Every structure is written in structure tokens, then in C-alpha cells.
Length: 135
Length: 405
Ligand code: SF4
Ligand code: SF4
Image (cartoon, protein in one colour):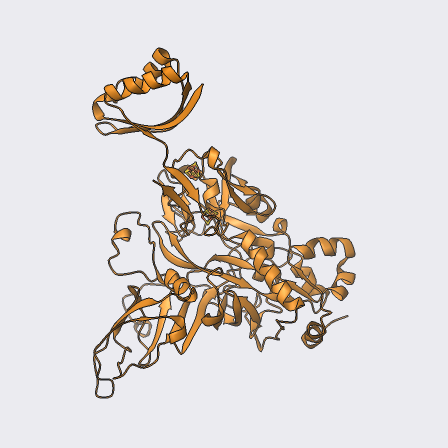
């Protein structure tokens, strides 16, 4: 069993094709969609966590790239700089995965990298540039 | 038995003073009772650390040779325009000033990554900043242009002077519309998917002295990591709002004007802030000691988050269009729990004011008093309270002078 977090970029002509469905049925992968952005006539972006047998996973990714899906590892991690954070908590109500959370009753802020799905919603919310997208 | 400020200062000198912060005092009084606690405790320290837009600093740069008259001229510091309508080399920089034409602000909503608040933070950090200036040139100030680097040590005076800080209570912001809005209360998601608030609640200075019985012009305070003073009530000071039984205002009410020597301050307590789609500002750390001169003053200082309420206001319509409408009232205890109920729906909450940092300020102030490094002052002038006739006015636009009416 291997698990990978990937960003799948779909060219416009593939938007209507059920690629995720194919990955699940043909390659018996478990696909957990963390984030999806699909706009007609534009590139679609799907952030997924896929897990399955290593050979199946390799074959699936091979297949996806032959049909035109661009695959990037989700290395675009989110970094929280504790020394820049003033612990206002502003980002915590916006974070959908609770990666950014408040410890009560102290009202201090914590970041759990493993929970972060790199949705980037917190980036424009932090007034102190304490959260950064790492490329 | 009442105490005087002089007696408290005497205890500070001797090292026998008893100081608790505004959070600790709650439990202390619960255990000891008001009477005994008022005899025992001399000072309660408060704190707040939040964006405060009506903050700024004035500087005297020192004269150039030959002299230049910046007064009435044009000056930028790291591209932030400074106010020059003063004498030759005096300047004022406000927290919300932004560079002219910063491309990062142009595309909606705009990031406002650098403004007056960030400039003040850079200066306090000891950084060199880029000064460009143009003066119109006179016989006594012949020079026309200046382009140099400067830091805080190079200047004669650098003074933080905030005309409105420490708002006593504030709105809770939500967004009832169906698009995301970008406000000074942060990013508000559509259909009330989040709510933001901005007060340190039970630690906040003016909520612990709700009727301004001890805080006034001349009160020595913790300001931006250094020592500062209250110089009066701040702009928009509005003490006549509805209050709870304890005298705590149910909405934004009193404010303070404060000043202090910027050269003593620290970037930990003066932070430039960027509100996406709104602008730049400065987060200011303020801590105010409350002398426990009698039981009544102590009673006010024991205020708890559950005793303080705030109004939930829609920032998509009510706020911008001055509709005096509160959706409902919630307490700080609810706000701090991470969730409030508005119109029967659960809404996640988050703050803009840092409670954790407010506590740190109250602790620092407590320690400096206990260690004999900070003495209390008696205000030389009170600030207008609930019994004043202050009226909070909106601007009436008109086309003729009032005499003609
Ligand atoms: S990117 Fe930010 S908001 Fe999104 S999950 Fe990660 S921490 Fe939370
Ligand atoms: S919004 Fe920024 S400063 Fe505030 S808690 Fe989150 S990371 Fe920290």
C-alpha cells in the first residue's frame, strides 16, 4: 500500500472525462479528493490523496499522463511561521481541515501540517504573512 | 480601606506590592471575596494586542546641509508618503498610509503588503529605510531634493502618537451576502460562514475600568514594548452608549489617545498588518495598570468574558450603509469558545485581537511593577464618562454653510 498526495491538472478537453472514476475502477485506487477546481473551458485542478498497490498506482499515473493529465506531487506545502504569528486566531475559522486550530483556554494557535490540504484559504486571511506557500 | 497611588508606589519601591493580571484576579476574588482581595491586591494589569488603524508616529529627521524645507513638500519613507504639513524636518506617518501605485494593491482585492504600519515596524526593528524628499526651496532652506537612508538612531525624536487605541469593546462581524467580502474585520465568508471579533475581553484595558475611574490623561502604560502615556480620550470616544448592569458597554464605546518614545519600543509589540482587500495598518500592544484603590475599582476589574457582550453586525450591508442594526448579542465567553449561534445557526468565530499576546503584555507589565521598574501615575485629568453629554455624530453632508439655513 502506498499513499501519495498529488495535484492533477486537467487540460480543458479532459474535463468531461471521468478520469477519477477510471482511476478508481481500473486501478483499484482509493481516491480522496481534497480540493477540486473545475471551470468550463479552462484547466481543472484536483488535489487528491491516492492510495493503493504500488504497481497499480504507477500504472494509473502512467495512464493519466498519457491521456494528458499533468501530475505534480503536492510538495506545495504550507508553512506556518510561529515567530511571525501573533496568535490572533483569524485563520482558524477559515481553515477547512482544522490544520490551524486554537488551543483553549490559552487561545494559542497551533498548526498540524499533516492535516493541511493546501487549499490556501488561510493565505489572504493572515495579516502578518505568517503562513506561506512553499513551492 | 482605600489606598492611594502614592501608597501603592511606596510598596513597589519596597518590593512588597501585590500585582495580578486581569485574568488571575477573577479567581482570586472568587476565593477571597471582594473586601479581603481589595486589601491584599494593589494593582491589576490588563493588556491588548490588535490592529489599531489610528496609530502613527512623528519624527524629527535633523537638518540637512544645506537646509531643506520638507514642510509643505513631499516625502516618502520606503515609498510610504509622510505628512509634511509641519516645520522643516518634522514628519508624521500614519499606520494606513500606502505607497502610491503599489501594483500589489491594484488588483481586487489587493494584498496591501506594505504600509505605514510596516514602516513603523521596520524602523523599530532598527532597519535603514529609504528617504526621498522634495522641498520647494526658499532663501533660508535652499535645497530642493534629498535621497538618503535613515534609521531610528539617526533621528532626533521618534514618537509613537496614536490618536485612537484600545477601543472599549467592538462589533462582531459577519457577512450576510452571498459573496466573500474583505474588511478591516478580516475576510468574511458569504452567508455567515464565519464571524470575527476584536477585543481581548476580560483582559482588555477599558473593559476592566469601564467608567474610566482610574485611567485618564497622564496614566503611565505599557506601549509597544516601551513606556507610554495616555494623553486623553481617543477620537470617536463614545462613552454614552448602552451598558450592562456592571457598567460595561454593549458596543464599541470609549477610546484612548496614547504616546510613547518609539526608540524604546520593540517590533514584537508593533507589527505592520496587511488586511487583504482593505489596507495596511499597525498592530499595537498596550497594557494598562489599574491601581486597586478600593473595592469598587476591584469589582470592575473582576469582569469576566461571560459578563461582556458585543453586537453581531452585518458587514455586507448594515456596516457600510450605516444601518444601526445588530443581528444579536453574544458574550466573549461564547466568542472565545470558537462558535456562536446567530439566527439559529452555528457560526465559527475567530479573533483579530490576540488574547494570547494580551495575556503576555499583562504578565510583562505585572513583572515590571513587581520588580520595581514601573510606577503608577495618578491622571491629571479624567476622560469623559457615561454621564458626559458626548454625542457620536455622523457627517452630515450639505451644500451650504449653516448660517444660511
Ligand atoms: S492551506 Fe491553510 S486553510 Fe487550507 S488546510 Fe492548510 S492550513 Fe488550513
Ligand atoms: S492569522 Fe496569521 S497571525 Fe493570526 S493566528 Fe493565523 S497565522 Fe497567526
